Length: 68
Image 1 (tube, rainbow, N blue to C red):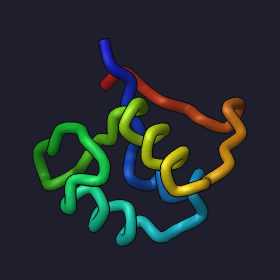
Image 2 (cartoon, one colour):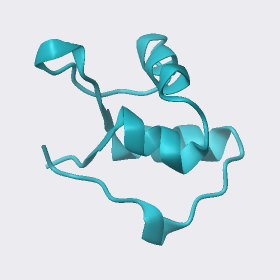
Image 3 (cartoon, rainbow, N blue to C red):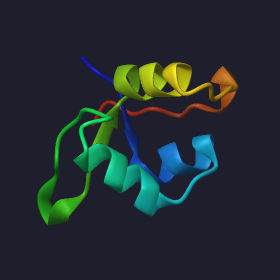
């Protein structure tokens, strides 16, 4: 079962705005489902691939992904 991040959590980890995360999601740079009400969930795998590709350094202990 995949793990997910909220757009708020992804923004916090990359130190960017939630608007940037939402825009990148809509451009297909992240994958994951749209939830009712327009919320987005980012798969942890796509988030980590994006961060690596774009040179973001992450502290694994700060990543709090969920399964919903």
